[in-house]
Length: 105
Image (cartoon, rainbow, N blue to C red):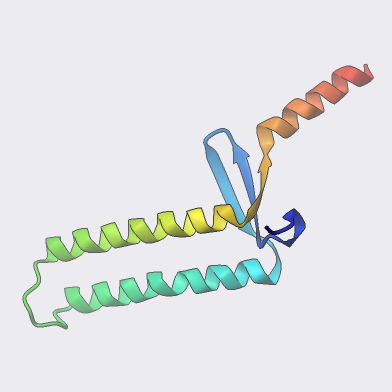
């Protein structure tokens, strides 16, 4: 198990929304590595749509497959990064701040 300060990402949560940000060199390196499959998928999609396979692939079929693969990639990347991030709950922090203000008054 990684210590919180060693994790390569920081996630800020505010209810159902979240924002994953890289922390340091390791976080940026992981983002670069995760970008490579997306680039490969985009180049492959361009090649198929340009008629590179000469197999007569239906453009609608190619587009649907591309969108599904990109969705799988995006969800996988977000989940992988989330698991390896320090999570900061904004609502919890604001509630603690409000409670501290009431305690001081």
